[in-house]
Image (tube, rainbow, N blue to C red; front, side, top):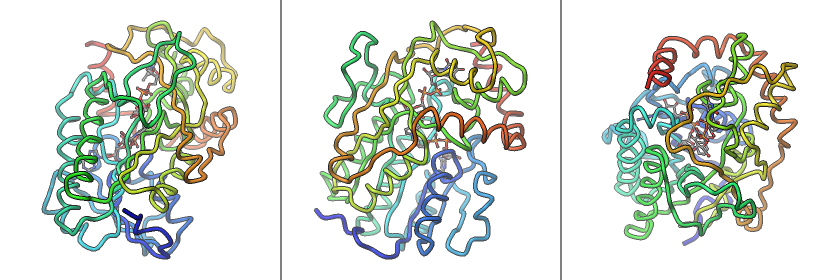
Length: 346
Ligand code: NAD
Ligand code: DAU
């Protein structure tokens, strides 16, 4: 099946979850690169969704925001009627919260994806790009430093979050095989950058340090994550939407593995602080030891390459949180503080 969007000069997209971290960076990226494209952003505005992430494009004529739940089939069918593609970011995304409240992950990530797929099918098999995670592949051991996830790695998710994302990936593939829905899937590694909700490790640690608080490092601090700047992730999605092979999966990463301790030391050094600011705390239950991805396929087939080197990216990101204190102070309050209480008193 060919990618019907290849070479298209104009596109109308339904983006779900466009008020969250990656979704808002993606909406901005697309409207800057393709000023004639139209975007409808469907977002429920959960604790993680924030219209302040998109304030620069408010009132932009090619952009429309719709507040709503992806589980609302009637609404989804109505707004997806004349779009060329659905780009699906909306999800419950934080592993720790999935430990406390797995049901909301199953609802949004599994049932929500199902509702969108059904709408895409009923509306004449709309093109569908599904944003997923490398966490569906499970965990690698620290000793197996030569191993990394790739497109053929078997699924082995370990947390309620990654299991719900794995279930959604399977549903998306089932709609391709059963109904011929023109889908693509991407499984990306850990993102960082502007507008990331300060429950995730990088913005949590940077903002804690700005508040004069210590940073809570889980377990022994040796768990490894493979970091990619959000702009590189957005560029990768752009290339898959326009040139990706239908029915295919693309694994995305920027070859930037760091242990959590190394990451923390990089943040502390950039902010001119010492190791004394680390507090080792109780580990996350079922904490995946190591993630690493090899994105040979997207590089070879679509010519995508990550551009942001980690050292430059982390400095730029820290500076963004320093310059945008108003943004994170507003979200690091209310519901967030209640969640934190629940997490540390679990
Ligand atoms: P996020 O939590 O910052 O944003 C999620 C957005 O989805 C929010 O705006 C929220 O309001 C919206 N949303 C949640 N439930 C909804 C519902 N039922 N209906 C409509 N909108 C709803 O998440 P993120 O970090 O930007 O992640 C976006 C996507 O990328 C997710 O699918 C996630 O699994 C995937 N992903 C994230 C990373 C990462 O490092 N953050 C890496 C790989 C893949
Ligand atoms: O790999 C992609 C995934 O990356 C995405 O699918 C998820 O949506 C995203 O949240 C992220 O998951 P992680 O669990 O890896 O991200 P988090 O920022 O929560 O944690 C990163 C590492 O830092 C992890 O090993 C746990 C550790 N950590 C995290 C927090 C919040 C700490 O040591 N202390 C903390 O307070």
